[in-house]
Image (cartoon, rainbow, N blue to C red):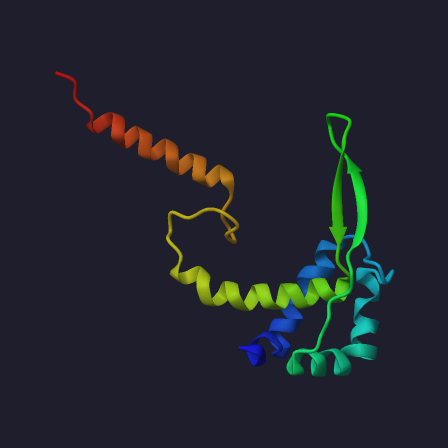
Length: 135
């Protein structure tokens, strides 16, 4: 499985997703625009650690963002390298498991949204009502 996760094409797709999303830097201060340089410098070591099972993700950077009610929500921001590795794992697992999930499952699925689930539920309700006969 790890060889598929670490395959160049999968890693490239993960890199593109992370850099397209931009996002803030993690505890190391490396931004998405600096990820390519970091990969050039550190990938050999990181890849070896991943293969040996010794890779340790960096701590997340903690920030608080304001909520509409005046409170604050805590947010953890991983480093961009850790986000790329997470994305590579996600892409591979998604390619394996998404095809066998129920077509009626909408949670955290690529190309599906909560709005789609609501639309489908309304369709089911309409079908139910049209089949319901009161005597």
